[in-house]
Length: 283
Image 1 (cartoon, rainbow, N blue to C red):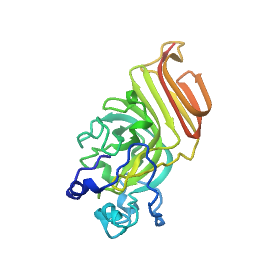
Image 2 (spheres, rainbow, N blue to C red):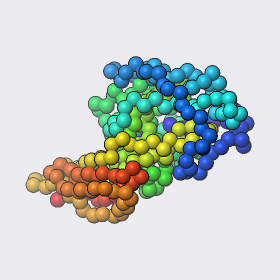
Image 3 (cartoon, helix red, strand yellow):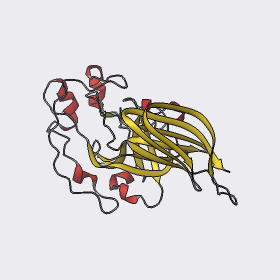
Image 4 (cartoon, helix red, strand yellow):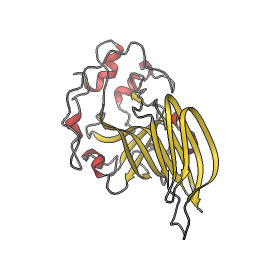
């Protein structure tokens, strides 16, 4: 999620490399040091994210690590610890207590949003997720160019997402996040926005100007689009209208109506993207 500004950032803003959205990682980025083995996946709610974090970050320079990189003094800042790939989560987007975190494009080009999860997903939340900035929700991040602007998740939307479940060690609270969210469904009324990218452009290290460029290891995703409200006698889920549809590197697509949901199954090439804006309902 969004990071508050601090004095070293303001002082050094003119000497930090920050590429435009979509820029590849700088070629002089040093190789990452091997991560130590973590304690295994969390088995209870409100787990301590610091168990997965190197302190401080990857070197003794700590918060000054990105600045030290400018002078060749440091290794990369690796503040994301991947717990598990392809984790699905659903819930409702809420306003973030951290102002601006889900109503504007962040300084690094990412779109951040905060989700109060549906019941039964509490294991995704570490104790840091109950810090004031997260209010018991899970943060999610996408590159704003990975999603068409009309479907950027905003407070009040219902969302389903699938992505990497990580611990974000940038803050001491070490909260759990979905970062990046490769596949996203946004629900507003009877409209459904569906998007899937294999290669994410989210920033890992803003101050080093390094984009994640992580690839989803699973090339397939299945979206279940449930119409709003209860069905009537004999009704089933149906596609009412296709409002927009954009395909790039789509190896397979199947859209079928089932009794309880419109099911969209997609398989992508590594650089592919699938986007559809649909109206669904009972018929």
